[in-house]
Length: 508
Image (tube, one colour):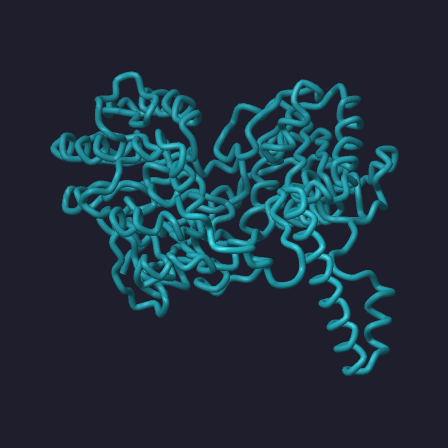
């Protein structure tokens, strides 16, 4: 059985600091995984400070693609070489990113008494689909397929002549498959729903794929600890329990449960109660779709432009591009889990959506997840992490903290989470009626209600007659379009059989 200790507690309670103190005060060989490269610099300073307090001198080495002292090797190769190199030292801390964690084969750590420490939950599950009738032969040459115990799924592995990641990124035609290729190289691999790439030559065949890193990959480590307040709601946790059952044991440990915390007053301001936010609504891809969603986003932008004391803000990539250079306050990344840089700010705005996507149907089926679980693990957790990076994360803060979110549903969920975590019971929801979109409703897809009612009143035979008539009209219009196109090209043939030639061609 693989045992993983999970440190839980509200943001700011000291989960990460617990990891830092342990790694610097208790000699050992540690791998410390952080969400982003930007956080590595911040935690390097924290580790040095804690080591000075403890009077220890561990070797601390960051390994990532932008590290100044890195060698001309791939990051994963450099990590495994460092583990081999430092296995004889009594006290060492290697700092890597979540991405490197999921890409590295850590079997080299087995038997060397290495310890894994992870800050925040890795975004471990990805899925997608593609059609490859023309490029199936490339897949046949680059990727091997192996059956698995899970019916309908085959594991992908790189063939001997597969391209490198650098080659993939330099190729305009296949660089869109970078995520698929990268996961194919990882220890957990990629799974596809084809048994033979030749089946994908069919133009109507869609290949579905998924990949998920789980804490089962931490088996080579002597001990493993994850510090994350939302871990037990994460897709990583849910997928691990579904896939491995009792093979992986998560041991929960509360941090800061008895610490004294002042109660701030929280104002959650929202812009609409008429619809849910979504990037598809704000930025429709089909040119014929209505632009009401973008008008709503413009109204939010105009309102936030006038909030002169806004502390920090972010949103989806498209939202950030739209708001950039318009909003006051500090523009930050949407995923700021683990950062302490904004603790002095008392307000934030997060115009964001991360609901289930079409490709999530794959994960829902494979892991038996629900749409509500996916939304809780993504959108709600991202909002929670973003909001809790400001002054509200400080136990001593008892002032007013203001949050701007897009819709009422997000505001209600955040209010509930603040109460459940013991952050504050003094939470008010304030509609921003002056923005002008409070009751704007998003049109529902499908036939209009009147059309549905009319169809419901018809007999089956009448509905069939309607369908056949509509089908005849559609085919007639298509024939007319074809005739018009041929006439324009000069290839339209007159009705009837072609005329015979007047006589045999004269011979010379």
